[in-house]
Structures are given as C-alpha cells and as structure tokens.
Image (cartoon, rainbow, N blue to C red):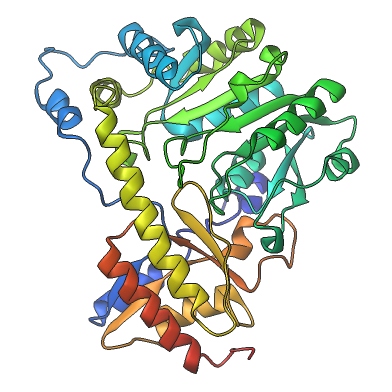
Length: 399
C-alpha cells in the first residue's frame, strides 16, 4: 500500500471537532448535547443575504474574477470606511473563507522552515495552516492570570530569529475573547518596524466588542502599510459560516500582486457566497447593535456560571464569543470526553473544546477549556448548571 505524506501525519487534529464521534454516540443514546465547542452562531443569517441567493438570475454560474467581483470589493470598501478603515478594491482579494486568506498570506510571505510568532493560546487551525506550508510556529505565552493580555515586548524579542517573517494575532481573540488595546497594537507596530517583519491581523470578530470597548485595526497603525495583512470574513459577522467568504487585504502592492498568483491558481472564490456577502453589507447599524447586545448578555451568563463554580474561574473577555476557563480538573481533554461518554444530568450534557489544543507548547492549558457562547441564554444557563454538577462527580477532580 502506498504511504501518505509525512505532512499529513504531522497535521494536528482539530480540538474543536475531534470529539464529535463521542458527541454523536451520546446523541444516539438519547442524550441531549449542548454544543459549546464550536463558534457556530445560532442567530439567523440576514434574510436579505438569503434572498439575494434565491433571486440570482444568471443562467450560468460562472467563475468570478480570481480577486472577487468588483462590485463586492467596492461595497466592502464602503463598509470599511464606516468603521474608520481606508482601503481600495485593488488592495483586497476575496477568498474561500478567512481560512484561505490566511493560508494565502502564509504562502505569499513565507518559505518552508520560516517562522511565525503567535501569542498562545491561539485559534487551533493556525497550527494546521503552518504545517500545511511547512512554516514553524514560535508561540509566546499569554496567561489566563493576566486575562490573556499581550506578552511584554521582551518576550517577542526573545522569540525573534533570522527566520522570523511575521507576527500573527487574532483581534478580538479566538479562543480567549481578549481585545487588544491601542497601546498593545502600538507595541506590535514598534516590533514589526524594528525587525522588518509582517503583522498579520485576523479581525473577523471586529464587531463583537463589549462594554463599548473600541477595536483598533492593524490597518490604522501609522507607518507600517507595507507590513500589514488584514484577514477578514463574513462568517461570524453575518452568522453565515457556510457561505465560505473571506478576504485578504494589504496596501503592499508587491504582496497583493504575488498573492494574486495563488488566487489565480485556485481560479475563483465562491460565486453564491459573494452574492450573499455583498447583500449582507446592506444590513443597518441596528443589526450589529442588536447582535452585540445579545452576545454580551450570553457572555455574562457564562462568566457568572463559571465563576460561581468552586475552583473554576475565567477572565471577562471584551470581544468575540468565546471564553477560556480554568476548571478544577486533571486533564481538559479527558474531562471533555468524559462529559460525552460517562456523564449526563437529567439526560443532558455539554460538549466543550479542550483548551490544550489551542496551545502550541506541550503541557499548557491542560486544566482549561474553551467555551463558545453561541447558544441562547436559557441553554447557556442550563449548560453552566450541568457543568457545575459534572464537576462534583468527575473522577479527575483536583479539589
């Protein structure tokens, strides 16, 4: 039998989805599972986006331009102008989700064995993308004890080597919900200028900022236009993960021209996704205001629930729709699996993502879990109670 590649063997499993077989088995046994493991919003996709797809009148679904349709890119420029970011249509490439935008960025600026610095914990698929292109991740530790704040500039400088090509951040952050301050973004600006590297800023959760906290985009940092790549997506903003539409944006002309070669090699982004994404941009400001208010109230249910459990705690995030919580357990992966295989409370249980999968450093995050608060408040409150009851009887409880 022919062998598979070493790259495939080294590809990490998703901590978000790796326990799905155990969840499916629980459901087959009649157990109701509250899915707090994945950021799949339950808020309805805007009707005007769905209607745009239903009303598509072209007789042939053609390839779009490799960089995406001009009408969509122009409309995105209008959206960015409203949030204080000045970009032009020729400075962006529409991609198959934010994932392709990030993969395309890696391919464009890094060669095999180059390095990217990422504050950990970080979105688990970043590791997968790095493995995909042969790039090495250099993690720097953000602690739950500081609320996952950006590490000191000295920690970045310790991690920088001649092979360092970029720093990658997610702002607001997945999995922690941390929102970087203006001062922290300025620190990153200083680093990329000093060491002549790129700053890749994943800003797909831009709208999800709470207590009127302000989001500071990397594209608004002065004097580093040629260093910045912005990653964005329609998935979370419009509760439309399945349309698979994202974008890569940079004011660096050499970079965007090079990235276009990769865009052309995969022909085009999804046509119907662009139709839906363009229509969704007509949502009024009240749409964004309402979803932010809803997610903030959901966050508060989870924070209160966790911090009322003996031995458990989590900081209060100011963005996105995730929290990372410390629990009084021996091992997060064992606990999350046990919740699906050996525990239920009144016929119900909770599925979470073990936080160790969001760390690149072996042994970190073993007593932490990531929780997504994408369910309605009533379900979240019940899930927090189930979690509390589970921790009373879990065999690996550390209290």
